Length: 299
Image (cartoon, rainbow, N blue to C red; front, side, top):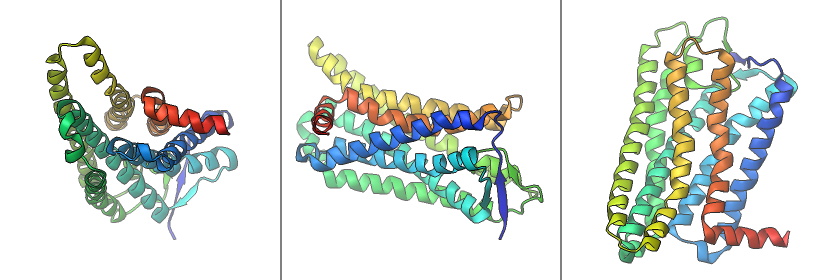
C-alpha cells in the first residue's frame, strides 16, 4: 500500500488547532441547526429553504473532509494517509465544492423568480423541481471531478511523498508526482476557472435582471425589501468565491508566497464560509431566525 505524508508548516500547531476546532464545531452546530429547524417546521418546506438545506449539507461535507484530518495532525501528529485515501478526499472535497457553487447559482435563480415573477414563483419553482436542479448540480460535479481524480490516480509518485499541507489539495498532490503533470494542471485550472466563471456569469445575469426589476418599482420600501432578500446570498457569494479564486491563483502563480500562508488560506477558504453561511442566513432571514429562536429558547 502506498502512503503520502501530510506536513503542515506551522511553528505552533497546537495553538492553531484551537481556531480550527472552534470553526469546525460552530460549522457543524450551525448547519445541523438549519437542517433540524427546516425539517421540523412545515412552514419552511419551500424551495428557498430546501436550497438552504442543500447549502448546509455541502458545508457539513466540506468541513468534515478537511477538519478531522487537520486536527489529528495538530493533536496526534497523525500525518500519514494512503494514496487511495488521499484521492478519495480530493474527490469528495471537490465534488462538494462544485455542488455548492451550483447551489449558489440556483439560489440566484430563486431570488430572480421571487422578485421578477412573484405571482408565478410557486409554479416555476416547486420543491420537486428545486430538488431535481440540486441533483443535476451534483451530477455535473461528479462528471467534472471524476476525470481529475482518475488523472491523478495514473500518475507515478516520487520516493519523497511529502505534501506540505493539512489535507490532500489537488495541486499539492500533483507537485509530488515524478511524471508529466501538464494535463493535470491544465484540466484543474480550466475546471476551476470554468466553473467559477460560468457560475459568476449566471449569478451576475440573475442580479442584473433583479436590479432592473427593482429600479422599476416606485416604492422605496418595496425596493429595500426586495434587495434585502438578496443580501444573504450576496454575502455568501463574496465569502465563498473571493478566497477560492485568490487561493487557486496564488497556489499556481504565487511562487514567492510562504508555504504556511498557502496552507492557512486553503484551510480558511473552506472552513470560514462553512461556519458563516448558517449564521448569515440565520440573521438575515427573518422567518428562519424566528424559528431558530423558538427552538433555542426551548433548550
